[in-house]
Length: 488
Ligand code: NAP
Ligand code: MG
Image 1: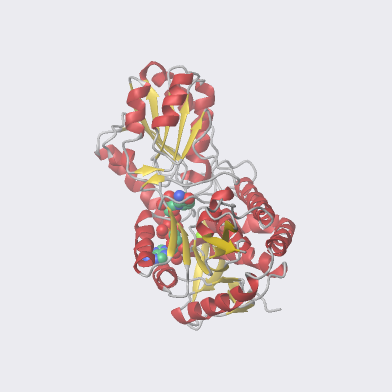
Image 2 (image 1 turned 90 degrees about the vertical axis):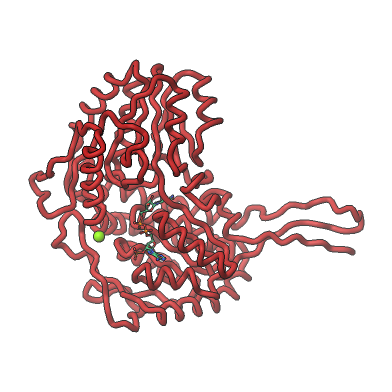
């Protein structure tokens, strides 16, 4: 067995071996809670490295697809067990690499393990239907076949769960994988790949190549031997990948940004709405694609909601997510930190009122990290940039409305449509929200950021390429349907 790391430098994983890049160059990964701390180094890979990985995946796919679904499932069960053994180590690495609290990364690792088990079971579930032929001496049915080699490109905000929710279904349906993780969290991905190795997956079934988006990500999008690309990340990059895939006839799936609203109706349970808004907006420092960023409140309860929101926000403890008692960690990197600060300035310039956050945050051990306070703006109008653009930080824009009908119009008045919540006790408001809210995930009396692994996940409008991930829906992307007609 080769080793993934030497002197804190992680290799690529290609054809079952840990290998250095032909560039001889590495990229540093730092801790956003303390920018002087190096978490590790990863390979700054070249197109040549990617070529080796794609060739290994292509070769391995021939045998991998011939295994039964149950046999492939057994491998995934083994990976889940190995990962369970290393849960604390993986979670700690993710916290050090991108800043969210240890409680959150432990929960995310446990979610990754549950996803592996869910898809392991999927290897024994039905893949097709029998369709009555007009010829009653024939049998007609559908079956499914893998795409071949799948390219997986992931973001840094869920460094454990997103790679697994793409890789596990890709593998169970008989594809092999080349994964390029976000550079920001590539060490965490190496730790996940180590679990696949320890579980004994055949060489070449999963390959990891780290490096820049413009070289390795774009290389995956353009590679003629990669038959499907699954991407989660920003809209700009997603669209470019989609265009490259379309141009060469490859299948693609894009999950992108959000500007997710919470509506608080006059008849809502206000304490519940406050609790869920804080969790949805500020957990993971607001860096979830499903995070709450607009809170649209009916005028009758606006002041009381705002007061309670401020009161609870003041209780949030900020600091290094590895420490006990910390509720919110830093932004994941300098550019996210700068983005949050720039939107505070934009909000003020556009005439909204900053009512929480915005001062430089200097807690006891915070001077070396990318820390911001939660941000709350009052008097926000729907056409302001803080009400339209994804910020990806702990940032709430409060909007006052006269009716639930007006709230829904404003909720839909953005280019995104990923998730949305309403807090109400009125069944007509609930039904109207279910029917009229343009979002892939609509939640009632629950925060915008909850996702369950067995249910389809994805967005409407600019939030996705209109496919769905997770649950049974993953089958639609990771396989092709074949219609079979047999005449006896
Ligand atoms: P990003 O900059 O788009 O990066 C995502 C991935 O794409 C990274 O692996 C990145 O590599 C790679 N990449 C960058 N440039 C590329 C190119 N030209 N060609 C191919 N790949 C390229 O996004 P991010 O900043 O990591 O993540 C934040 C975004 O993800 C937010 O917009 C958020 O809403 C979205 N997100 C969406 C969901 C969802 O399910 N809808 C979930 C989580 C996050 P490097 O890291 O090396 O640059
Ligand atoms: Mg980092």
